[in-house]
Image 1 (cartoon, rainbow, N blue to C red):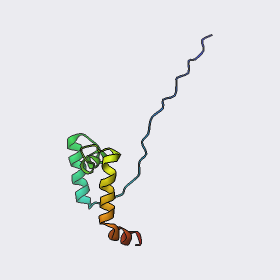
Image 2 (image 1 turned 45 degrees about the horizontal axis):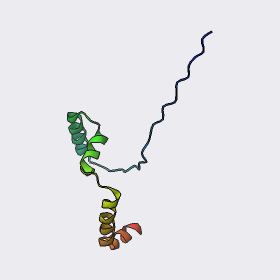
Image 3 (image 1 turned 60 degrees about the vertical axis):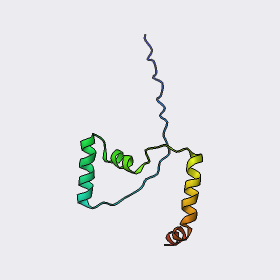
Image 4 (image 1 turned 180 degrees about the horizontal axis):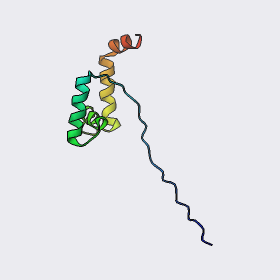
Amino acid sequence: MKTKRRKSPIVKTQKKTTRVTVDFPVAEHRKLKALAALEGITLQEYIRSRVTPSTDLSNEELDPIVKNIIDENEDTLKRLANK
């Protein structure tokens, strides 16, 4: 009698993500979806490619930039947080 060999489980490494919702007018959504289709990618991939910087910055390079943006816009950020 043969015994069945168990397959080892596939472990996928998942990056932590967060969801962002952006509302587009219907016509703009259709246009973006068509542009993504022309490139052979999903709408999500298309939008990510347009909003994500093309150069990868390390955290050491990015942290001072983010801190500077926060410092320069502290009043606005406080006002938005209180809405």
